[in-house]
Length: 277
Image 1 (cartoon, rainbow, N blue to C red):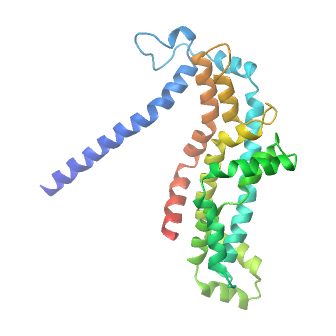
Image 2: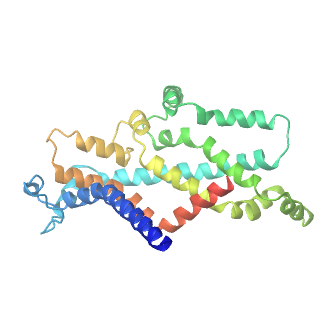
């Protein structure tokens, strides 16, 4: 009796998950499907989910109409540049706040976390004026510079470092291991799940960032994929849904592929970082 009730509950849960999954996946499937259709097939009376024959010309025409290869290069440079510097700054800051004792540590850490309490949009104007004063507008550096430090990343990694037993540090000191060597050889390997979790958040966030790159750039040579897609939608030729969906699929594909390839690692990283936090 209990087994049958458990089986029914489990089957119901699986059914709900299947419905939710279909609702989530359907828009992405429609985007990909439409990007491979001919123009006359988009708004037919009977929806055509699987296009045949496949029309790859939409992607070729998309690249002819806008420099999406350049947008992709700029996006990769900006995202990897931000993440690379962030990993250095949050690691050093988290190490100091977690393992070093100094006067006013908690107060200074609170000041550091104010970044998390202030809406990001409230910082756009002062950041814009600062970049303008240093003649950095319309450059890739302008898109990266305000995000080189992360209060959230520092908080996340500090919590992970604080969970590591002090006995490990004492043993390392006895063996002649200095502070930076202990950080590199002990703390960072043990906090790898947290670093991976933060990297995922940072990559997805800045890959999809739209407003800040739009504010600080005005030429295609330095614009990112999201800006390129927005400009592509606003073309005077009107809305060609096959081309728009081809561009949308091109912009979203890297993140989807990244998730599919590292799906297991993503889940493990978030679970472990959540437990440590």
